[in-house]
Length: 220
Image (cartoon, rainbow, N blue to C red; front, side, top):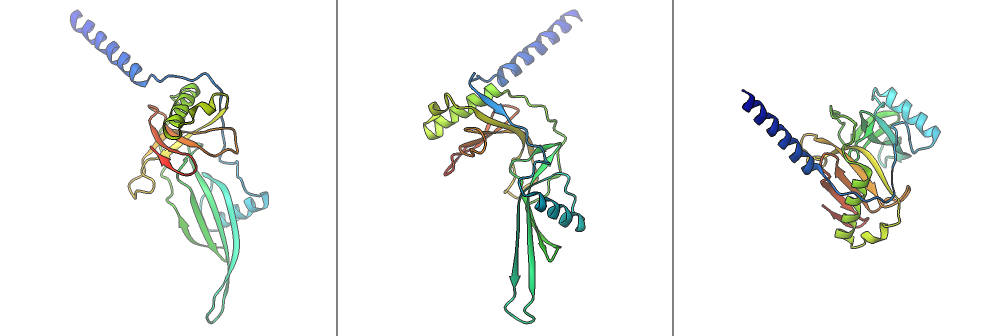
């Protein structure tokens, strides 16, 4: 019995050691800052936020997981009888779940004369995944600089640059018409906001690159 317990303990320690080695990633000690953007941090005018809230509420569309990033308004005149004129309003949103952004699942809602007309994009079903990151910022900085060197041959330019990191979720099946598959992920950009490119997305569980975009070409 004791020999079995010793074997079991040794096996568990071996598995734990292997798991630790598998998840080990090198770190870069340079500057990288994590930014936290709450769902309430809308990037449209205050008056437009009120309009968007009212449009969604009047059409029974819950908005607690929407961050507004664009609002548009125009009108359309038909060129046939009865020559009706319609007011068009479009609200574009980033979706959140568990208080974190889903990076690649934006939506739009189109309203015609204040009445919901159609939506673009799929509503998330959410996830039971937690919001505790596994990767640290030093590991993410190293991953990004290595990929900048690999894809753009310019990793060295970030030696004295402070990168930006944002934690959230990523739908691995977005755009493929498959079932939603959310994973914990990081978005890394090559400088402080409002610098957008290059940007890279990494899976939080093992640091796998989801994709890298330098503003012109994608790589993965």
